[in-house]
Length: 146
Image 1: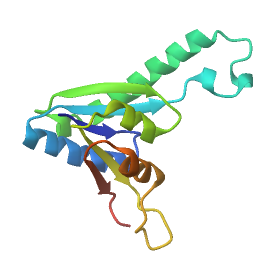
Image 2: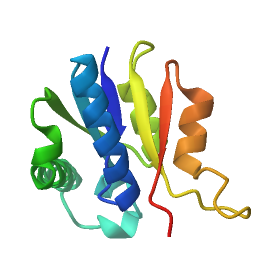
Image 3: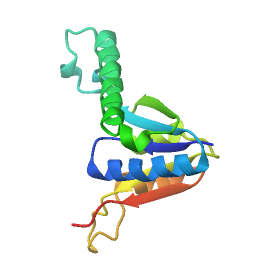
Image 4: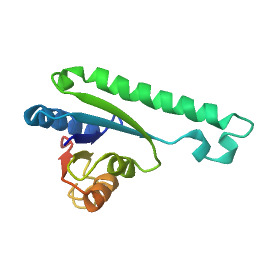
């Protein structure tokens, strides 16, 4: 049983990380940090015209790994005492990356800015998608109110 949290560097994803790290510490389970990225070869054909797509995709994967490591390093105090794994997933939709990483016994933690028409009562698209399609428990962490 792991706790899976998606990171993109936003304030809401860092709130989710804060909650997830505390919960992983309490449960004495590992924390899986997930970062999704779109490889250049999946983008416009013009973006990779005349380029070695395989090399560009490998560099995008390395870049995503570096970004995830930076986010973890920037939040090292939160992660102290927690077994952490990093996962980068080539995926256009961050929700799908989380769902592909998590199993039925895993808990997915997502942040939500609460954007919507009723003063932020509605969830964001990633949290909605995860809530509707996850095999296991989902925790939605609301960002700080402004």
